[in-house]
Amino acid sequence: MFKEGVQEKNSHNRPDIANAVNSAEDGKAVEYYFASDASAIIEHTNKVIYLEDDDIAAVVGGKLSLHRLNRLAGEVPVRAIQTLQMELQEIMKGNFEAFMQKEIFEQPESVFNTMRGRICFDTNKVILGGLKDHLKEIKRCRRLIMIGCGTSFHAAVATRQALEELTELPVMVELASDFLDRNTPVFRDDVCFYISQSGETADTLMALRYCKDRGALTVGVTNTVGSSISRDTDCGVHINAGPEIGVASTKAYTSQFVALIMFGLMMSEDRISLQTRRLEIINGLRILPELIKKVLTLDKNIKSIADELYEQRSLLVMGRGFNYATCLEGALKIKEIPYMHSEGILAGELKHGPLALIDKHMPVIMIIMRDACYTKCQNALQQVTARSGRPIILCCQDDPEVSKNAYKTIELPQTVDCLQGILSVIPLQLLSFHLAVLRGYDVDCPRNLAKSVTVE
Image (cartoon, rainbow, N blue to C red; front, side, top):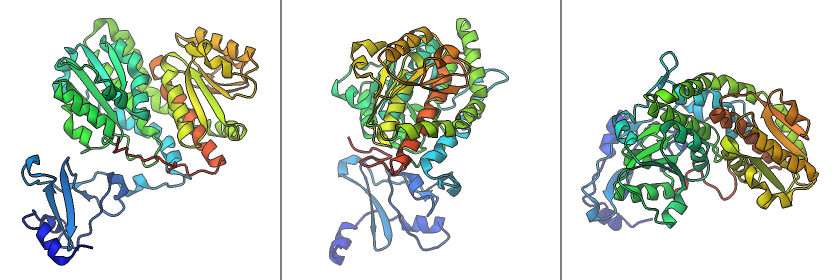
């Protein structure tokens, strides 16, 4: 508690905005909540004030005042009171055991919402309103740099190959912390994407400032309107996945995936040689929500596999090509929620070390889809079974060649190769959920982790 005299001294000349808040609330008594994410306080109020860097908010004697951290930071701040476009039912569990489970099952809707109003399936046009004014500048760039952490980094890995194909530009994918550690050269004709669900990830924000100082065009891909990344970038895409409460990201990953694919489609609209491929991907996006619903019907099958695996100490997830990012993301979820050691392995690297781990006791999940890497993945499968491995295989429906060598299979609908990763990651999200429940852990609040990582 401060003494009264100290309170008066420290609050002298601070702008008091309590009157503005009171007028917005029609004279009702005002309460103040402080949170790092707006979804944390939606059950109490939908009126928020977003603080910017070097802002300090103080509540003294029931009055809110704002000032700057130091006098050199600028003039006395004026921050508008904003109304959240978020409904309370969006952050309630409903009939689900956990927020994470609810968010997994919301993915048909969240993916549709990411595309809604942006893709016209009649004319095959894609318009991302936040990017259209900068599209010419992006097309003139010499390379794209995709920067993120954790799941957001995996969304960049998942879409890199498709973006290279659709934009005909080199695409670098970077972990924000490593990008900064290396003092990576960045130039004015680079375009840098910053992918973050919260828009507040500390390392990604620091990478944003690093690139802005070097004159690069900056693009934000976030799920939070008014976040630091969405404010500080030159342009951006709001993925519109809806509030994500569970610490382990699920629906934000698939919406980031779709948003980045849509960016590639927007870039390739005037490329005659890419129109057939472009149309194939747009048709794949059109039916994607229905295919996700079909994958979610496999939940009981996945639960039975979790019943066999939950006492294991380690798990390998293996794939290549478009599904390598799925391996990384699936392994991350199995680390985060059930606290089981898991590793995502590029199948092409199997003989360069990981094969030494394979025996009848090591659980292996393999992702083998009918794409350009199908034959090579079958080769990896033979290597695993030759060492007495018992692989659990995610494969396309009606694939007897793969099924005959599998210990168990999870058969998925087939779609365009560059979108298959969206369908193949969902069983791994469900598996991590069921493993955590069976092991008796809190699914929504894994130990030592935070939803918005606001420190390095």
